[in-house]
Structure formats: structure tokens, C-alpha cells
Length: 288
Image (cartoon, rainbow, N blue to C red; front, side, top):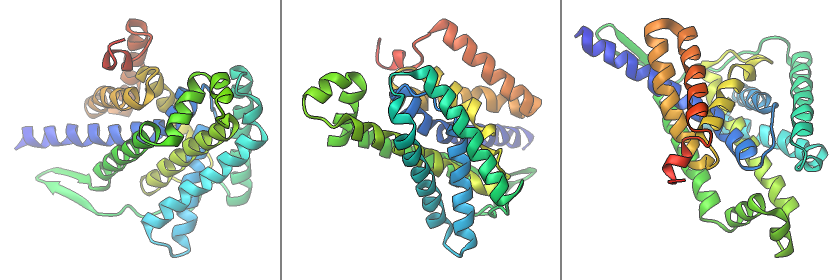
């Protein structure tokens, strides 16, 4: 009985960690991994999604609809950001890093002034599951399922649609794509907004289990960047692979040594992986 309970605890933590890492990093994988924009405001887009979902839920909307509203909120913020700032910085990665850092500060301060340091949260749905001394929220594995679902939708969009073809062409060689009649400015804008919507949906899904505050995004930004970097150049394959590997390491460490040990092991594993294979896990998956 004790062994089964211990295994269930480990499995619960690993699944929860996997869902969190994949959700937090998917939008960043699109913006940073594919477009080369170092978006330091990614955590704030997650935060906007959480606030959007919480506000919509307070207005009486069902939780799934509220989460979609949170994603739309973040998408609108992403569209405004891209049109006013980012579209001028696609060939200037360092400038984009500085600009998005400034945007992150602005968003945090605006939310702090408007809503205060804390905001009423959303109750965690579905209850919990128990087995002997083991108890875990059912919502945690739901997060992992939602993350896989969003990944599959994103993969289909980029690999099996006309927009995806244009996006991959633009990201690979914008000048050639432009000469072939592709509106690269429009493709960049849609791709950035898509990454923002994915970040907002992540925040919406995190809202029932997180403390909703202006600094909510800072809890996820480091892990998101680490996951995308370890995943490598092919982000649609590398990001889920790195989420799986890092969740096993950090989840196992958290279970046996606490949250701090789990985070330390995650960062150590990322450093070793980058040292051993600088091109990331996707280089193994694509045999390159």
C-alpha cells in the first residue's frame, strides 16, 4: 500500500509538472522558438489570460468559456503589442528583448493600479481523487490533457494549413517568401497573436490553481524559456519532448526533496543538456 501511494504521488507530481511546463512554454515556443523574438513579456501575457478568465467567470460565464475569454484578452494585448512595437524589431533581437522587458513592466504596473495586489481567484474544479493516504486534485491531469490538446491543434495549424505553410516559409526566409507574394507582415502578426493567445490560454488554465496577482507570470517565465531552449530548433517536436524530460526530473526532485530541489534539478538538467547537445532534443528527434 505504501509503495503504491508513493508511486501515485510521484506520478501525480510528474503529470502536473508536465502540464505546467508544456502550457507555459507553448506560446513562447511560437514567438521565441520560431520567430526569434525574445519575448520577456511572455509571463505577463500568461497573467493577462488569468485575469481575463477570472473576470469573465465573475460575470457568470461558465469556466470553459471564461478560459477562452482569457486567451482572447491576451491575444488582443499581443496584437496591440505587435502592431505598435514588435513589427519594427523582427531583425533586432536584442532590441526586442529590451522592448518586451519594458512592456512586461508596464503590464504589471497597469494591472497593479487597476486591480490591486490581489484578485479573487477561481475555485478548482472536479474535486480530488483519493487512494489510502494519497490525495490529488483531478484538475492537475486535466491540465496535462489540455496542454496536449493545444499542442496538437498548434501542430496541425502549422503543418497542415495554408497559413502554416506561409508561416514556415516566412520564418525560414522572409525575403524569398515576400518575393513569392506572401504578406510576411500579416504572417508575423498572426503568428505573434497566436503565441499570445496560447500564453493567455495557459494563464486561464492556471487560474484555478494559482494566486492571481500582477506577478503571476514571473512564476512561469524561467521554466518556459528553459523548456523551449532545451527543446531546440524544431519547437513543435522539441517543446513536448523537453517538457516530458524536465517534468520527470523536476517532478521527481520535488516529490523527494521539495519544490526548491525540483527547480534546482530542472536548471541543472537544462545546463547539462545544452552543454551536451546545444541544438536541443529536437535534433535527436529529427536525426540532425
